[in-house]
Length: 487
Image 1 (cartoon, rainbow, N blue to C red):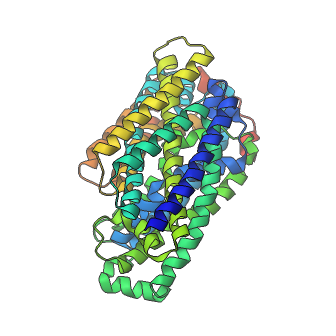
Image 2: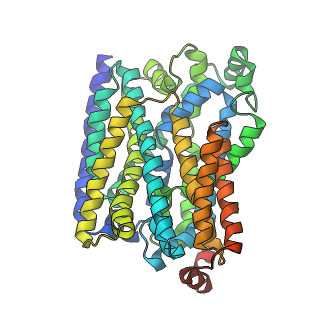
Image 3: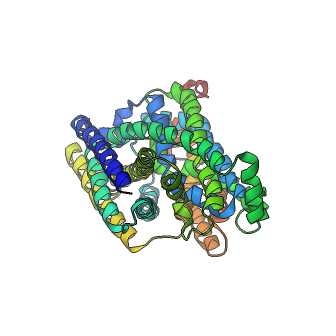
């Protein structure tokens, strides 16, 4: 174990030095709120795809999803199927139009995008507050992943790794903004994908091969090798799960701004190709969950299965790399969420909603300070609360945010008759349905029905109440064929 500790410390030192270096260099290029929010829309398709996948493939890819695979077996693979669907749909069908509209309106965030297109500061306020409410628990879940990782490998407490690494993350995220996040995400996503290429074949090998894996899982519990699960992944749940994944990313501001940052609307085709490749590779963590159920049948914490598998069967240096890989997954997601929340507070709430006049330099500083404060709150929350399944908390936050945003976004992009009354109703209806159903059903059923309610509410109310804003009329009337050519 001493060798592992030394290897991890050395690897971690290089890793953190890399992050801080990129953060420092990027901070020199971040001179305005537009730089901080979107990198001035100069990010290429490979970097956009890499930062989307690095953000998408959070600690749940390394810890939460392997934990669900450990607990439920093959039925959890529906999550992987849904992820592929969910990440392609918004890029291919909404990305070009959202990028075009955002550039024309000069909007920097999703709340700003919706507030301007519907001409509604109240809607912008609702979405901004939703980002604070739902994304802070997501960061708590990610920081929990750091604790699980270190306690599994080293037997240490959750506290000190969360505090130290969280502080470093907050500092570099607050300094460089989107450019820092994008470039560190790109490097880390490639690294994360490379590690998964080792984990998948090793998982099959150490349990005796593909057939042996399924036979041994079946011997433990026949439900582990089924298509569905009698409790978690029933046919009804799977149906709603696919709807959930098909819609949730459309309603995630921290993901959508990556579409705004692309340098050329015609590059969305390339983004889709890169994203599919990365998604397929990074999903390999579930194989360690299948193997771990056979090799470690009595784990007390399912989320610890991948670190346990690696620390037991891999050489010291591989264990060190996996530690860094999980940290990469955590840091990329948290940095993206931190960036989104900080920009929302400094730009959407203070400037746009509360009408406080700031110079561009002051706005940038407020966004940076907001990032520091919200990040600190998330660290404190992670020390006080450690949910059983990291993925479930993440999916709950995503479902809530999606229920708030999906309807207004879809109608803003495709419906020239959409009204602000319809958009506001959609947000309030969607989140209400989600919260009420969450008391009785799982996150996938609650989230999918919340998002469907948001879409229907926006469409129906827009037909009977209010009239389209002048911005919507202009945007839809003047659309050229540029975004159509990108599909």
